[in-house]
Amino acid sequence: MAILSQLLRRRLALFGLLVILVVVAAALLAPWIVPFSPDEQLFDGLTLEGAPLAPDGRFWLGTDLLGRDMFSRLVYGAQTSLIIGVVANGAAVLIGTFFGVVAGFVGGWLGAAMMRFTDLMMAFPALLLAIVLAAIFRPSLWIVALVIAMVNWVQIARIIYTETRSIAERDFIEAEWSLGASRARILLRHILPHLLSTTIVWGTLGIATTVLLEATLSFLGIGVQPPTPSWGNIIFENQTYFSTAPWLVFIPGAAIILLALAFNLVGDALRDILDPTQKGRH
Image (cartoon, rainbow, N blue to C red):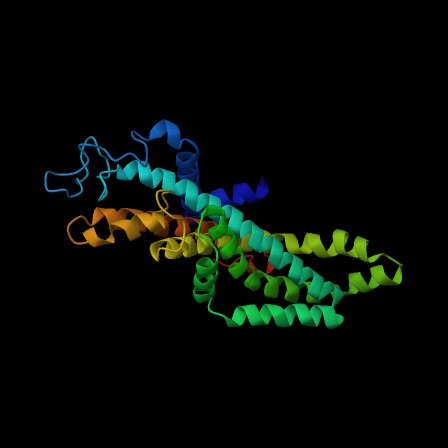
């Protein structure tokens, strides 16, 4: 509650929280707030020439190239972005934390081998590696989440490793060793609690990166596959109408940017609140 109270006193963080709450509420209530099915090709959803309809009183955000309601597809696309953002980033945080803690706390040849593997993974461009993995596996919602998790865990692993090494060398840890404390006690009572704030911050900031990467993969045609709507594949499907129906590209693009910005604002605020070295900085 104290952290939430401090978040609410920061205008940018409050804006980010409101955006996230609106998107989450829309995704959860999608079946009750959308006027049409996201996959329904409406008989009157195209002009006589077969072009998408512009936004009006019936179709709030217009229709796409197949005559489907854009508002309905955008709301259901929020479900895809949030599921992948939470699942993929959560998996990445768990994998990265495991690698970082084990390598930093155990050390020796095992820690060195784990960090060399992490460095090897970091050497590959994340987008290129994601494209390769997505091309190997048949793209679907959960496969895309798995691919993104396999790409994004390396950064947090390196950070957790550095912090674990730093904490393990502090005086109070040496005192615990001298008193005969077990490895499990030191790890669970002293190491992991000190890493909690870093994990929370990176977990929040990583959702923004995950949402952007999913949108990129879907735009390239190797992410979430139609007819399942995602903000990235909505842009991909409608890019040929960029000049004649720009709302089909600008609206989902603005949604991607706004959600990523919201998570970044909240993540930055959490870093300032939870990191003692950031106290007093804005």
